[in-house]
Length: 432
Image 1 (tube, helix red, strand yellow):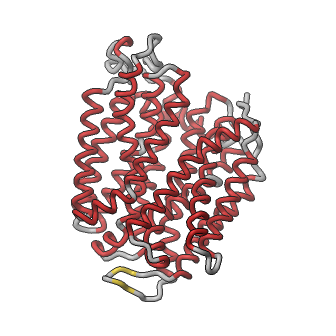
Image 2 (cartoon, rainbow, N blue to C red):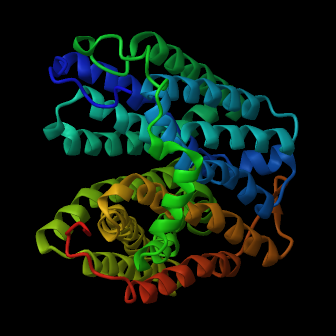
Image 3 (tube, rainbow, N blue to C red):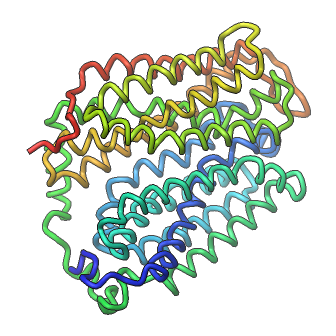
């Protein structure tokens, strides 16, 4: 199987064009991840659901997304990025159509489940395109560009989505998103190739020969082997708290919390939650650079986790906290949560290099478990603490209810901080 980039690299202009089509699909993946944050009121009113049901509706995305992480890496090798990304985009379009036209909660949840499963291939497929179309020295830079494109999708799911919903309604906007996703999928199928022209077609024989390492027995053996190393199990539990807390706030309950208790309009609240995502995007390369510079992983990871814990706690629990200080605390919490990016380097260095793909899938599953568990858990607590207040057919939750829900996030952060003490420092060196 031709599974490597050609000796003669493609012209950069052509490489960026091909990569850009894949990146557009990754942008849509992050858009869908955060979109429920600005439509909580509309969804609760439309489907007559409580906070707990809304949390599950949002988390359906993460259930299927997390389940797809390990097989996605294998499919990227067997199918190639063109087939993987185009198929994922077409299924995502179908899921978005289903979500936009859903007559009931069941069909809306089914749509979210399809969306999560299909967009789960976007990042891995994009990395595969980067490997096949760019010289190796460009890989880190291109990967960084992928993160920025993804964050752009999350930002678009904030204020711009809210403004479009105010003009056209959430169903109409999601129908437009479905059409755009469909066009992206067709464009990937028509214009993207797995390798540059100098390498030949590159698609014809891809997948006909599967490496022995991709057999089901070898996959299971590899997963069992990586769990023999101490850091593997710990890094399945530790990192989920940071993206889980950030996405639970920015992607679900931040907008209603800020509108109810700080008097912000939904558009202004969406600006703040989107700004937290931007802070996370800016913090990721900073955390990686600092860790490499120090030659240590644990201290940077622990400091980031501790700072996120302190700033979230101050934003939610400090009595009479001025609004400007609360905003600063939320932005600092988003920035500090970016240290979760160290998970992938630390996990890769904790096992022999031959397990790099397996441990990456395991680590990414641990990261995605955070929002998958925290969104429904916080939503359940809000319902549990609900005092019967309603406004225009939608439940209104008190400050104390939100504090009880957000306490679950902080508890996981505190636990992760303790567990980090028991991880092995890799000193930025690959285990032999």
